[in-house]
Length: 387
Image 1 (cartoon, rainbow, N blue to C red):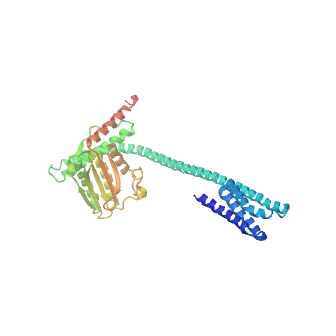
Image 2 (spheres, rainbow, N blue to C red; image 1 turned 45 degrees about the vertical axis):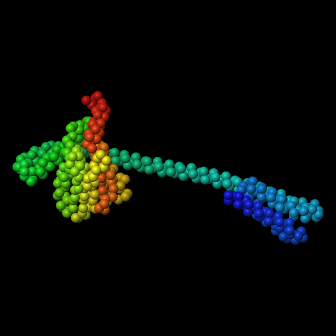
Image 3 (cartoon, rainbow, N blue to C red; image 1 turned 90 degrees about the horizontal axis):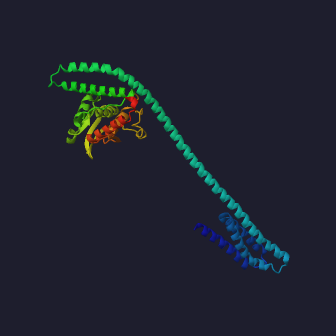
């Protein structure tokens, strides 16, 4: 549409110049010479805007508009007539040359544009390759750290196992000093359960470091309510040190919802300990249990500073920690534990203003089926020489 308007404008200029030639008396040569030179304007513009065909078309139209001026010189002899006729040849030459130059420039422009697009694509590909290389380098660094950590964990687990047995024996002796209805008897039972859980974790680390198949054994389920209450009692001293307000909102469904108490205690301890470190003195931590689908969600919210937007994508990656003394392994381990049982941990904004971790737990029947499936895969993948 724009090109049509431009061509129409040039055409009107040509017609106007032709009319000026026609109505201007022949003896006013100065004006005719001016009109003749003005004709080069639409010819050159036509060549620039429309290429060769535009320049030649405007040259031909300008030549036609120049005919009334030629008629005036027909009686002045062949020399004057041929001189004016040469102007038409110059019109055509100007249109052709200008159009060729403009067309060549247009072709170069297209060529440079294509080259620019290729360079842009190459740059984008180079940028993606660089990002991938950096990511692979980070993964390699993380793998090396995990490898070193695995070796260290194996040696630590071996050193912890013997003292752990002594601690358990001592705890059992101390527990005998309290009657079944004694108020401190409950803490002794919690101590023994935590020792058993730690001992099971140490055995898993040793089995894994030796390349053995992890034996889950028979998982003893506990009501989710009991697990959360036990975790709360374990953390009482930490909460009192900072005078933190700790509220636990339970529902009746949690009392009959069976979970792997040993593993999930570790998950809840990791998340709540992070919250305790994050909140200020006299801060607030709330745990709310709610139904979601066929499972339950345990949401742990605090009024701390929350998680920075730049850290949210990496918060569940190993060795990423916002604390100076943090190892960056608590949340990744917790996430893996929950995912291995078919659940997930979601990070969200807390209604208290800080961070909120929602732990989704499917029914334990799903837990059990997934755990059995993983064990079956591990056994099926065992080589004959492994025994």
